[in-house]
Image (cartoon, helix red, strand yellow):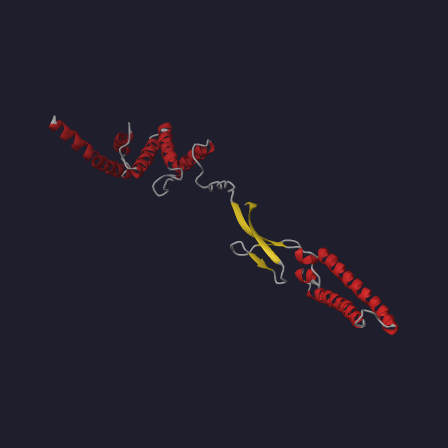
Length: 273
């Protein structure tokens, strides 16, 4: 039993070398155009199952098909040429070895095989690959600065300064300051005209009445400037500011105009690309 096993193992190991040797023998016979001797060797290498390397198998089918064509066996030749083209659609016959009629027949057979869809035309570029749309969700961070409306109700041009309107803020602050100073100044002047008993002389009384009208005018001007400042501040209030700075920690800060900024960070989807 051991001897039989060794014999089988030796046979298996020597099979590739034996097939290569027989292929070289068949190849030499074919090159010398001794097809009658080459055909049995080639058929033995290809059938019932080939034991040749891929490149040797392709050459064996080319040689066998050529031998059949020369022998007038077109059906057998087409069988071998078809097997060759199915494995190598770009195969061609070398015009140095083969006649023009065989090459023409081989090319016609290739055209029929391509037309039947058995193989792809080697001369036609492959169809472009269909690229499926790739859904990518991008996320961006934005910072929303919530502007406080509290400064809009403060006097002396505070609404304008909060809205980054320094010129208007200066004008409102000056108008309110002058009107308030006029009001306070008239009040103090009237109080100084009173005697130790709290009464005024007739001359001071007339002057006090004039100052009292000026006091009320100053107060009215102050209230008017104050109301105008509030209305103007509300009309020009820019609202919340949205920006996309580099990532930063949420915090509380102040705008250049001094408006408190309460910063909130949102994560918003930007779409599909």
